[in-house]
Image 1 (cartoon, rainbow, N blue to C red):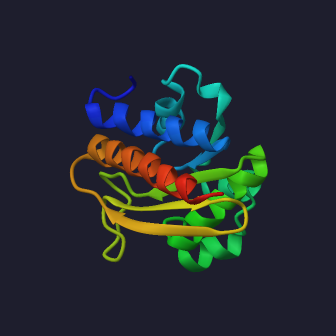
Image 2: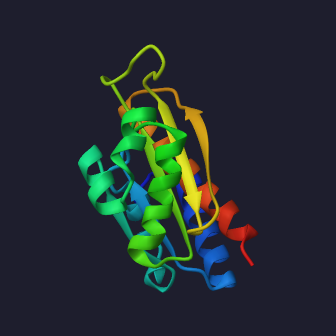
Length: 166
């Protein structure tokens, strides 16, 4: 596996099981994880059956041009916000034609923090193209720790969201 921890194996296997059982195809939109969600999901043999791709949209310009997140939303709420995470997930569904998608946007550190947005702040979004929701997390540790925790929680959140789909 891409991560050297049993939690990563369990998360990837759990997502694979749910997506295959439900006949769903997934995608991702990644900012602070830079492709690690896609890497974890595709570390599973046969993942092409249920995973369509991951857009690494690190810059605001990429979020706008690739995922169609309105620049006004980014300017008003910030790239690291629940609003942006939800729109990123919706944009991933549109981009890939997937049934469900997950998105992440956050501050992995060590720089980039503000008093209201500390290092470790991450928003994870999920969507099916119609419904979208996001959750706020503040992960502890260095850049690698924040990114690892983000990937694991994003895959778990996508699994729960997919499980709810009919």
